[in-house]
Image 1: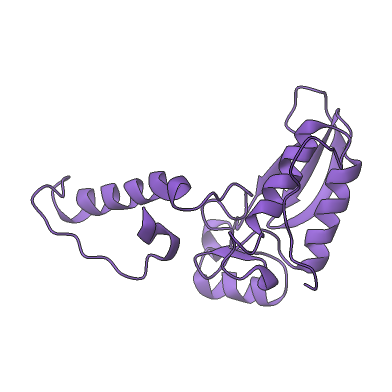
Image 2: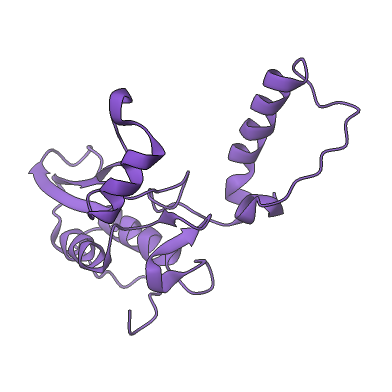
Length: 174
């Protein structure tokens, strides 16, 4: 990455419509140096949460969003544009699926091997779907994490407990 990625501001379109522009601005905002943890590596937060699989994939997504028509949908699989198909004006402009593995191969060892081969990426909760907005956006995930902890270890409640956390990264602000 030579030039920092910044989301456009204002009313000037760089795409064929506002739905496409919104997706492009969300993607670029995720990688803005004021937002991203390591924008040069496409990492938004969490040490591994990426907005795109690699730089060629990022540029291909941007190019696809710029030419995407109002009756087309871009399909993104684990941070890589894999197709554009004709839909209709009320269909989503972008469909994303990240880090999907069938159960037999859903292990970290297999995932890291696929990532090393450039075939998958880890999108965290919001990085790979281009909707990371900092601490305020991770509140739901943090709430769900603590709720699961309470259900699993503390009979459904953390009431009356002191909770000490570390290593939460972006979740720490929530």
